[in-house]
Image 1 (tube, one colour):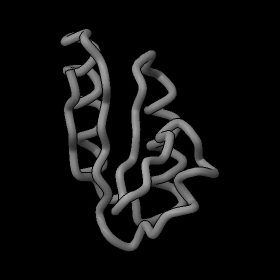
Image 2 (cartoon, rainbow, N blue to C red):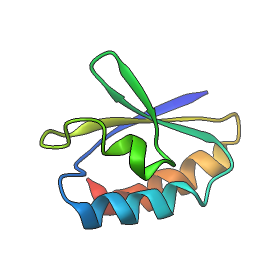
Image 3 (cartoon, rainbow, N blue to C red):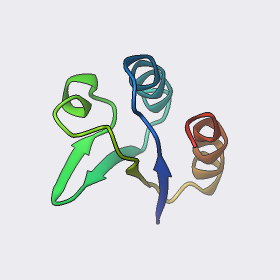
Length: 78
């Protein structure tokens, strides 16, 4: 099951906090920008895309509890 959110990661502190949060999950988490798919757990990867606009975040998991927890943790970046 995939769940997608649109988040704003427009400064260095938000990227650092987001990466720390993403690494707390066992599931794959991707950032989608145009035709690129970036590993959301990679700070360096995140800096390779334009962050001046909101990005789409996708968590790939069959664990509904983990998806709910992910959505809860990501509220701070909306």
